[in-house]
Length: 157
Ligand code: MG
Image (cartoon, rainbow, N blue to C red; front, side, top):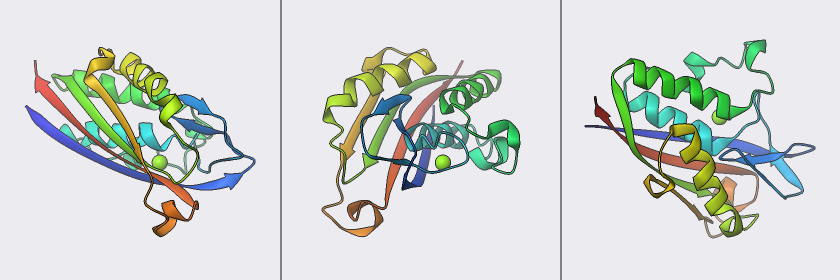
């Protein structure tokens, strides 16, 4: 067994879609970034790359590369799952915490879990997505950005 940890942050900006875990969220602001800025999936990607010690998301999908401009992060995660499998591992479970002051994410949790589970080829019971505010403190609390923390466990096949 190996454990991996991932962390990511994106700024909130006008004129952008808010996509978390591959699910579009209804909100006047979206996350800014080179790809679709899906902070949840980016944290999961880094957790998987961390568990396999295969580097980080920036090495695999450089933001200087036009190939990944506006990329659907579900595709990035699919590619990384392939790398994890090629390295001889199977994903056991993933646990994510999103830190966002707004919007309220509770109505989307179930859909986000299913979406992430689908990409990982897991039962949704093995994918946890949680959301918290930061009590108005820091960049997340001030509504300037959203952060995501993810841990995963992988097993050598
Ligand atoms: Mg990112």
